[in-house]
Image 1 (cartoon, rainbow, N blue to C red):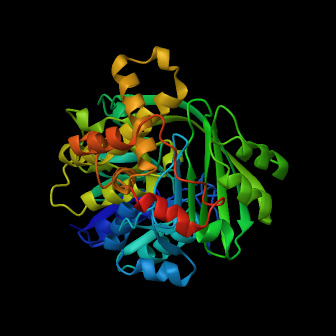
Image 2 (cartoon, rainbow, N blue to C red):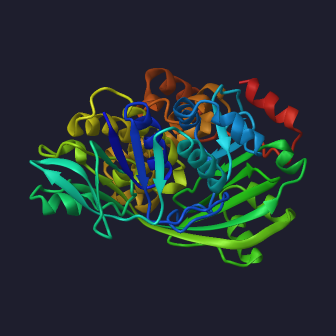
Image 3 (spheres, helix red, strand yellow):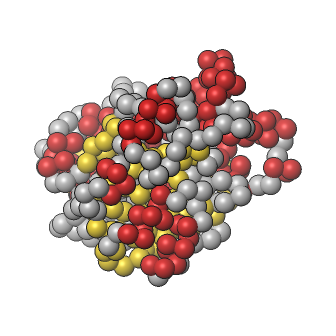
Length: 446
């Protein structure tokens, strides 16, 4: 095949271009932004100033699409880390046991990660990136998309067009113009509000840990993460449902003091702040059900946030985009078979986010009996995972998209939860109150 067009130079668009390069002689990536020369934030990536990390499975997928990129990023200061060994995961107020998971995540700022991916993509023969270019419509002949029309009126013919333009995708409107009913949409109202600050990272911070995740609980619907990143920095993002941390350092620390654990508050209170605070708001998660359509024009595919825009608190977006890009390497690029494959990629992470957001946002009395039972089980699961390394590992396999959510309620998991997840169970100690060796012995002994 000769020419493919990708709309959007997001991570989804860039990784799609990497996959399409293996099948098309030419690939053109369009983006409305002017592309920065250096690794800088840009207007079209509204969340780039907040915490980003590639989940372990996403890290693998990006390395497969762009072999050697991990080494390139590490040479620039990115950090690879076992997702459980050097991390503090606190869920339902329980501090998960540590274990060598064998799953490696990648810690880097979004500008550096995207910048290096963009450099790799644009260095590929036959690939070109056109900044300041807006796809205003589709070229169509006999129910087949044959290219795009730019805002200035210029037509660009192509054998395949991939829309990776994000949650503001125009594809539903273009389908309507063609007389095709757009896909059904599912919305989860969130009103998630973020505040982010960077801090100087010093040897010995967090006793050498590189990741802190404190998940919200129904009684405290606020959480946060701290991630080590290049330049000896921490990036700390605090999140609340319908509430946000104050912009001042004191307000930021005060918000962190009311999280289900104090790890982030201690870090914020002792580390040197860098730069200005950043804020972000996400009103809703949205999923477009392209896989359920019965009519769709050939020559057009949709991927990334244009298919499903997750609650970014869970850190799944870049990983899902990378997994969807791998689907472009397969032989069958007809729209409906492609959308069915993408739906299988999206189903697990969408279920994780929706179920957890419902648990946080709705009073237990308003939930179905099935939901209440599941929530009660998950509370016991996390209590057990404070002592049981195998359960902590199983949770990380789900969180890193290697296993489906149902794997947490297999017979083997049920037995371990019943044995170790009594409501009277006491979580493993706060690592800042006891030496690391003693804390790890307490989890190994179970």
